[in-house]
Length: 470
Image 1 (cartoon, rainbow, N blue to C red):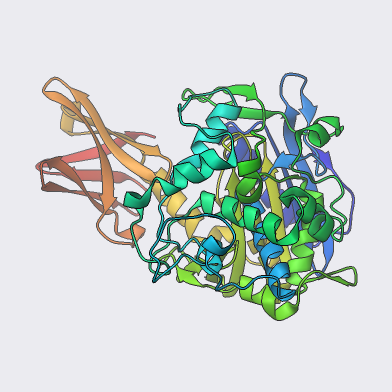
Image 2 (cartoon, rainbow, N blue to C red; image 1 turned 180 degrees about the vertical axis):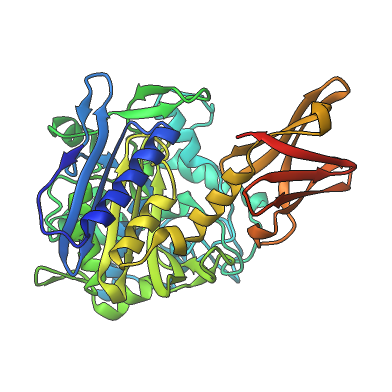
């Protein structure tokens, strides 16, 4: 584990909790390397690297290791757009077609810059990122032309029948919308997208090693080796998917240390080390909900401009974004009113557990994650139910297995096999009441009963089964 010495905003007990949780999550999810940094009141109070940035040579990850941050890039693209808005060079209500030949949508209700920023264009995913990531990393090939801007626009404009809602009506996460925004930045500024972001955002933030470019990444002495996670859980080294169409939606490579500068600027309302990157009201507007995404574990949530927004994370507004390139992953999150934030990144498609940044933020707030984070409580309860169950004298045997956030009921018996997801009857996981579909349209109730000694019984149809093995 690579450690950087600095003043700590965490107690020794809090650090031990966080590090123990990270190590456990990495081991369970087969994450080769991970780096994390925490910021509080403008200072980096904790930074660590865990595991290997390169497994083959067992080179340790550090807080300065460069990783592909995936969709965490989107807020940089949104910031570039908002700088151009502040300068009066474009307007959020401008139709996208004013700048690029996008033919999707209706003339009377055109798709506007605002709609692309908020993923509310009404266009569902058209798979451009999948095409490019698999192609650039030598995996599955989709034989769809996607090399030139003309190819990209042809692909989008040919999808008129795929448009599923009017602009502003519905949230559809749309990576290609941010590729279009990158093109808008180029046409309005007269600079290549990656040059604009470097000059107007990265340099003022002293993010001098952060890059979009393959040649710069390969020259850096502290970079990740990216890994595909195979279906059997093994890891295969591969390359980062460098491509122009990925830059604006997800192409930035950075370190968690440099990303803390970005977090600090966002927490401070647009200022970093005395230099203002964006007027405060415009920046705060990026961090507000512009379209709802439905309730989550922390109540109302939605999307702003390049940021996801959760209104009640332990009593505070959380502004965040995750990212994955399929071979690397990252997370940025901050609580403006408390001046705290977290940056983490890993060199495979998932950084292990969505609970890692939540635990880090809870500890920064001086809270008790084990007691206060729903994601941990749900995980504990699901783990309690997993295992092997047998009826009287072992006549019938059923397994309950966990696959990600879901439980499955599985059995292989003389009279047939079964594998069915357990669907909760309510949002109250402590009810332990589920159902499965055991036939076309037939809901079969499944109930778990936990006694005072922690023993678990499973009830399904005529059967009562006892947990005999975890």
